[in-house]
Amino acid sequence: MPVLVDIGTLVTPRTGARQGELALLPDAAVAYRNGVITWLGAQRDLPASEDDGQRVSAEGGLVIPGLVDAHTHLAFGGWRADEWARRLAGTTYVEIARAGGGIARTVALTRAMDDEQLLARAASFATEMAALGITTVEAKSGYGLDRETEVRTLHAYAALDRRGPLRVVPTYLGAHVVPPEFRTDRRAYVDLVIEMVAYVAQRRLARFVDVFVEESAFSANEAREIARATAAAGLSLKVHADQLASGGGAELAAELGAVSADHLERISDAGVAALARAGTIAVVLPIAALWLDAPSPPARRLIEAGVPVAVATDFNPGTAPTFHLPFALTLACVRGRMTPAEALDGATRIAARAVGMEADIGVLEPGKQADLAVLDAPDVEHWLYHLRANACRRTLRGGEVTWSA
Ligand code: NIG
Ligand code: FE
Image 1 (cartoon, rainbow, N blue to C red):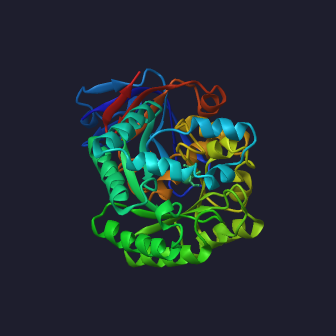
Image 2: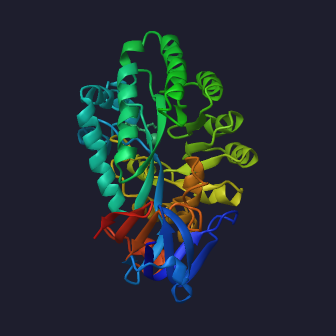
Image 3: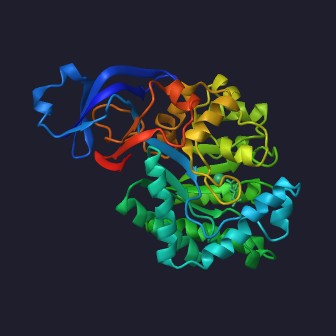
């Protein structure tokens, strides 16, 4: 079976440990069979039974679990650089949205793409993400909003998952905004979302349902209805909460038993306490916070309160137009006061929990998928401190090399 050898240091979070408690193993090797780790340890202890001569060299690099981006809006049409320029000149995100820009504009551009274009666009992003050491990505719909384009987006994610290089965890985000054609009848749109939840669940097109809870998007009561439909359909819930205004979104996510509450730039103390009590995972998105010039992600407050904190990109054409997850991790340290070790944990083990895949990925140990990134860095601190365009030399997903520098 194949073995990854010549690992300078292998670093991995540990199952059940406190966030940021990493195991370090110098001069290590990892053996795997059929994509699953069978053995890891000091290379000098590599058992002959694990080594059939098929070796891949890490060339002395730092090996971490494949990165997991637990929050992206991966498939969309067009870009919105002109809106960004207007925001830089003082117009706000909400003002642009009210004038017909923002999410609604991307919806129009996404509806205009055919299936092949949708898939090709997302696939081109996925290829670049794999080169950064990413092996799994959560991907939301929400730029179709009509029945047909939402389903086409989720089919594109299924196709992308099959073809690689990333594992794709699909989320139905019909509750992103009320689309223009329903503006005079919100009720009918919420009913459509509820119907779609059952539809995508029956066809296994999504694992999660996400609701954007915000004055410009969906109310707490609308979210409660969608959450009931989600539970009835056997899917899990995520909530975009407390991003643009402090509106009790985190408390709501806790009340509804969401797996994660995402964004949280404007979370209240009561919201932090509610997430801690409910065991909800917080997903902080420092790139979106930076691009909106919003308050820093409250990562330190959350960790001190005992909330597990995942770090993700939020990759989307409006608020986070880059998928550079290592950059998000550096920002989570600088602006969110996480330690580099906590940040790595937040983009591996805890991110895996946030996408419901903790049984298979996020930690390097026998029985888990051989999802690994080889970094040209001496240790985790140095990797995030000396943030390079790309420090990743090699990425393996399920033992397959998906990127080689
Ligand atoms: O996560 N918050 C809602 N959705 C996105 C923004 C989407 C957009 O502007 O296109 C976000 O920030
Ligand atoms: Fe988002």
